[in-house]
Image (cartoon, one colour):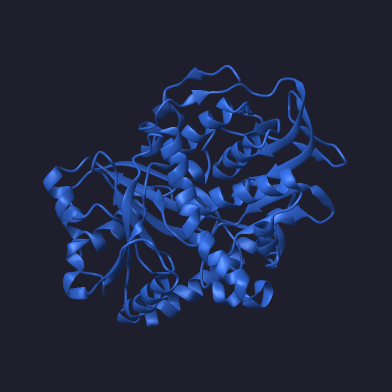
Length: 437
């Protein structure tokens, strides 16, 4: 195991509530030698760390290379909403995977949540996991769709309680007047995502995984044995996993062109009193609406409101995230007008054109595997795809990965320079349609 020292977590990202409240954030060494392993994993987020766990549990030697810090990307900055589902409407993929494949994906979207829950339970990871989530309808039509969603879950034998909440009762779950109803799901929930991935990194190291931070890969030299070159060292491995998602960039351009990095932003209020928190979100659920630029929010363990959203495709972050997000929060909760904002931060999520995760291996280099493009469902789906990658690399085959790989993925048009503004225009069109009803 690498030598590691404790650091001041708040100094790592001063504006992030998660960094300020992280447990046992460690400073791991950079790669400074030429090493060998069965598998080298690139990326220290949920995909990379959990793939490393899955491989080490199967007896393979693993080195993980992270360009910044464990959990530095979306894994340590997201809304912390652990929600069932793979992506958007899965029925559209029937022509690629068949009806059995769609049923598999539906099960995976549910069972992936339990993979996270089991990892937290088995390894006693302190990440404030709580159960309960509510989808919020912005329109009566969206609320009507929730009824069909509930019926579908019942037909699938969903094991957890669901409840439709009509507009007259919506304040039972959220004290706001802007919603047309909701669907409560007690099989989904919320947690502290940075503490989860930090705990998982410690699990990986306990299994023998060697983790190196501040070690961006500068070059991949392909062959029957792959060489990954960093600034002060290298790794030779029989197989490689690319778990960089929105941060892959030019390391593998043909793959990074299939993911659009999009910014999402969160603010955290000062701690609320027990009474104020209970009045705001009476059942302490995670909540998310249905808008194109959706709002998602929840209470932290110390009763702060964490309010996020405003998905940006422009490639430019707001100069003042709090000033940008606070008006969105006050539309939902005008009663918070005098509440102080203590933290503000943002990060990049990876969006695929069809909003479906991309999992497989490079056709021209079959010993290089990847998983990316979670499109906002990364907390649970990363854990599932990590299991599939572990199966495929260890056994040489994974039926589940075959299902994911059967779905084709478009490369965003225009290359790196044009795909962001083109998608920004597309999102403006969808938002205009939303406003016009």
